[in-house]
Length: 219
Image (cartoon, rainbow, N blue to C red; front, side, top):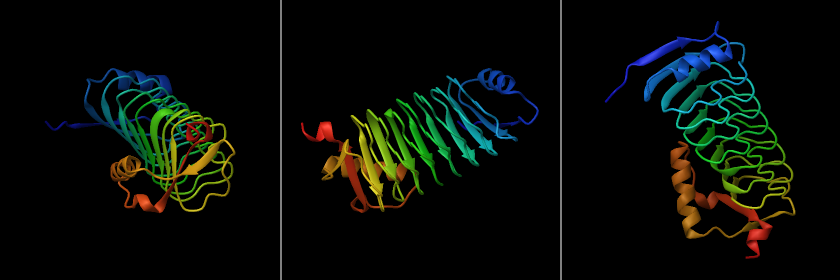
């Protein structure tokens, strides 16, 4: 069944007031939120199913520790967007700051623009995609999950990673001693194809290199 879209003008609401308003909506509501002044902590801790379109730019720690919510951001996001995400999805149509998806243990995050340093920091099971360039230390300390980078990576990819997979299309400036390139298996190629389709990106798995933890590579 289709749901009527509720529009919220959040410009004059505090982060707490907006959070209370969103948490009070019925599950499966479809909401369009207009924001200004790059609010920090937007949507933090939301725990019920909403379909949320955000018009405007978000500040730092947006959508922290969220579950079940599906968010389409028609703008940019600051640092640590999707930190500790548990489930649901986040689409950022602009750019994202540093530490995108840090410690996210579930769900799906896609960025159509660029992301800053330490993209996927401590990634713990979520799926994370960035279409354009990212800064240094992508996948720093990740333990599980999938990081897909569509336009190269900076220095020290996979530093201190112990698990998960990193796929990169394009130039990698340097790879940490903690990670190594491995041959892509058929199952990984299929999973990457599905991943790219979900992110709305055209691409072939053969265009990507795959990296995993050196510890796992020795198993």
